[in-house]
Length: 157
Image (cartoon, rainbow, N blue to C red):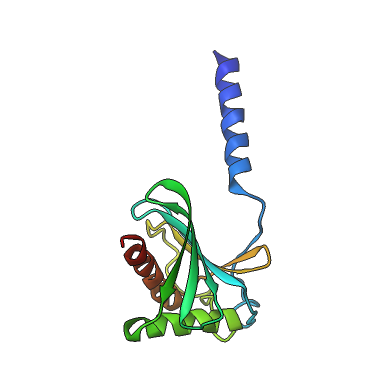
């Protein structure tokens, strides 16, 4: 019985490590709060209720973003759609482009904020090449969350 339990634990550990992927995630630190880099696209990863994983890419037209969806409502998928700007969405598109150009601070001050767990499973990343940089600025995250609703609106049609 001990051998079976040990084998199961080892298998579970190896599976979870292999599924995690090997792309580095940059966490905020004091130095990084001042650095502003350019990025290629934004990744939004929500787990739990409202489950979705998608990337937002810029297009030739600054008022249109390409969304590549990899997971939606607990199902793996490969879907591509476009999100078009309008007057209501203007602030979200502005912040998106500011992040990619390195004009918007994406890191929260690591010395401030609540350190308690909040029960949320959503992560926003600015991605350059294969390096994901987690966005920790709450104001920016609130604005980027609008893209989840925009995506749901496009996919429901």
